[in-house]
Length: 85
Image (cartoon, rainbow, N blue to C red; front, side, top):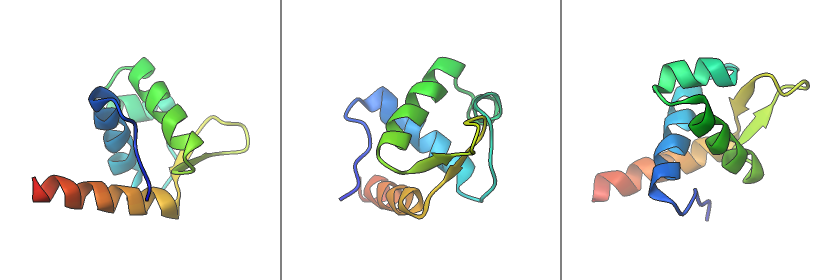
């Protein structure tokens, strides 16, 4: 099972980042912060957790991030769990 952060505030940021990246493409931290309406620190923290779990991957110079197939699975699962609540 793919898990997100245990802290509720972190999960919100992680899901926001995954949702923005889900359509495809690569975005920088600044672009992600703008599109998620989160601060840079929250986005960086979310990226750290998501990267550790293999849900995001960086470009070769770590300037941009993209979602992985596993990240898409985690997003779908999280959305299903939220619908059930």
